[in-house]
Length: 122
Image 1: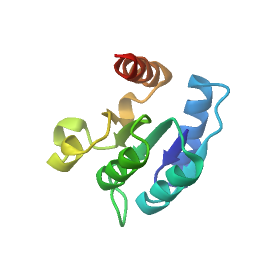
Image 2: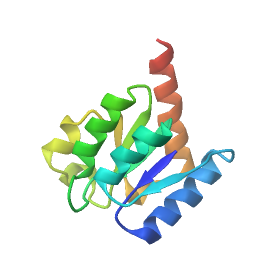
Image 3: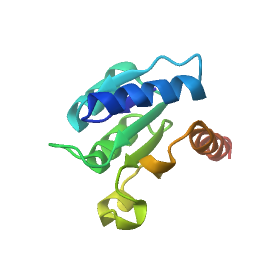
Image 4: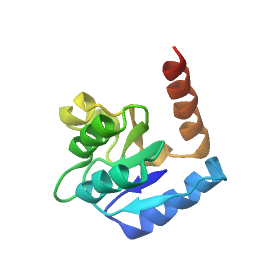
C-alpha cells in the first residue's frame, strides 16, 4: 500500500485507515506526486491512494505514471474537492477511481478492492 499526500497529518490518517481495512498491510508514504511515482517503482504496491491536488506533479499525472508502471495495482485518486467539482484531468486519468475524502472509509476501500479484483479475474 502506498499513501501519497502532501499533508503529513493526512498521510498518518490514511495509514491508520489502510491498516484498519487491510490489517496485514505495510504502508509506504510519499509527500508528492514525484515521490509517489518513485515509491511505486521501488515498493511495487498493490494499492495506491493519491491526492489529486498536490504541488508539483499532481495526483492525476502521477496516477497515470503509476498505472503504467503497475497496471495491476488499484490506484485511487482521493480529493478534498467533491468529485463533481474536480477538473476533467482527474476523470481522464488512468486511475481506477476517485474517492472524496469525506467518504473515505474502510467499506469504500473494500468495495473498490473487490471491484478491482473482479475486473482482474475477468
